[in-house]
Picture (tube, one colour):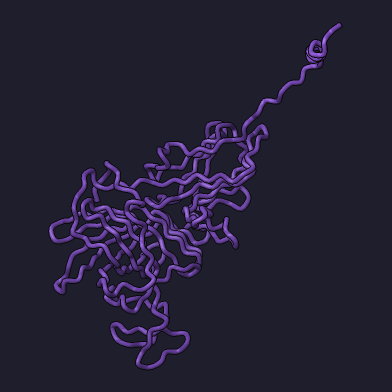
Length: 364
């Protein structure tokens, strides 16, 4: 007589075989040519490898600034949701923004050619929406986040600079694509042993609480320099020395603030500045300036005040989703005395957090 274990073994051997399903993973998302979260060329196309042929209609992605809160949430992940600061977006339904996409390698890779240089220095994030699907039906059901940044390249060797950290007032006189003046406060932190700097540049507006000798109407602002007068708030500044009439305005939708990285090189008594490409985003009106670069020379005048003149260029200017073309113009600046730094001026990230200059690259 067979024992119970023998009967159980016979039943197992005679039972119909049950096949195990083979797990087929969903599409992958990887940024090509990225090393430790850093890319080298801000003007090169961003290549996304999905690891398999992809259904083009399922790809919806965004590159935005990595603006996370203390819990690691991006603005649109908070309660209530807030808008992302979008650098570019690919959406086959609602249309593309600031980018030209193309699928290559048999639909396995998406190549994103930005309209302008990507911002250098600040942390960015690639966001791929749920629903990413391969051509054979495998689907990625969750949002993908890949933080990354572009390296800051300065001179091959460190160069000390006399340039001083602090607050600066800037006037950007845009000539193309549309003539306008942009007023900015810049909080600049420089490593004086290497010449690398990081700055937080913030929109300035006429001080709404400033009082003139004669009261101004509700629609006007008081201008004290060069002489007291009631003027429309949109009145341009005459010179950078009128900075006391202005205050920072970092708050959207009309205000904005953006991070700038760059290099400083002393040239006798003057200091040359070159900024790496930056992106300036305005919510109202909806304007994005990509590949914004400024060059200037700072030097003390006869009065001892450090002032600068220079030029600016932009790879692309967008109004809404429409391109207005590249931009150009001039800039002037001056140092704000330490005791007169305006209240509420946003400060840049610490240089250690912002990243050190690369060991190679062109000089300013």
